[in-house]
Length: 172
Picture 1 (cartoon, rainbow, N blue to C red):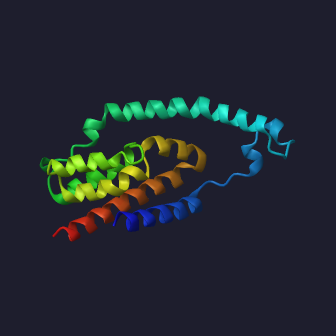
Picture 2 (picture 1 turned 60 degrees about the vertical axis):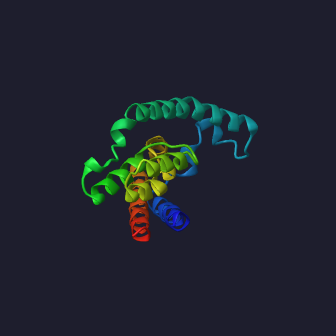
């Protein structure tokens, strides 16, 4: 199920993001002194890498730290939230926003399953946790535009809802 829904999320999200992304000409992406040098060079590569590292790494660290500080409020996935639909919706949205490293969602989901959390919430998190997160969305928004970024997040959340529904149907 994860492979099928994940494939749809990746393919659908990529297609939608490509369609909605703000197009920029290559001259807008180059610095003024780079426009005259059409050949790639190691010096230009290292300058671009340094420039991106000085901006993106601190930004990523800050956003991840803020998300970690508020994680307790972002994951109130317990029976007291109400009906299954509300729990699944909260899980899909929270899973879309939180940054989890690759394969880091597996122990989280196993812990939730062992503690008796809602199956639908686990299904939603199964797809949304590895898909996108606020740090990636902040970086993506600056590069591709906010409309495309919000659409990619919405596709991931929708995939989580589909995954939750499929898991609920399979476990009945």
